[in-house]
Image (cartoon, rainbow, N blue to C red; front, side):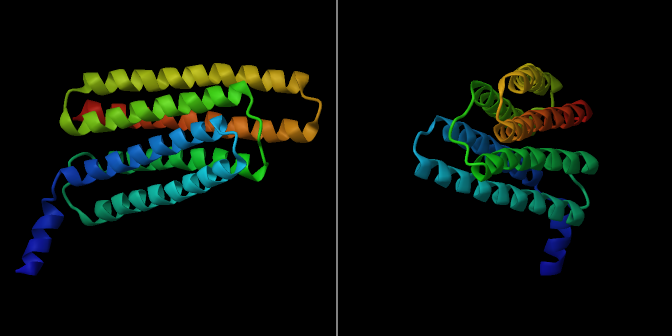
Length: 215
């Protein structure tokens, strides 16, 4: 009897299973982005160190969520959306969390205590894009109409365009004005990681649009 129950769970799972995990992953990434913004607004070294450590923990939690999605994907026969699309969306959300943690890790490793306006700007854009992603993932569960998801994806991609402008302007300014080569390298690497985070957000938007069209 128990074996029969497992059989039906594997073939006819609760459709909310994957959507619940997507929601958790998107929420986790958005909270990481929020912590990153908080780091830059904190003047207390001890608080910043705790925030950096919290971001690391949340990145690990995101990895666990992604792993659960992959495990269920390997086990469940009938999925609520295309299997490849599930894998792509899970991977894209995980990429955002990874890139946020990378930026955070570089700030901590390099001992950054002064955050340039451009760094704060891109961090704020990451947070904005992450919050739009969280909304889009929630809508994906409740609505099969692509319009609302497309609108949120448009906003996410607009965030990426804004970030590009800030990034390239700040890089040009950095190379023209910064005289300390070590400081230049540190800030360039941090800016690159932040910009990469926004690019990864665009990757999520691409995955969401594909799923929305197919639904």
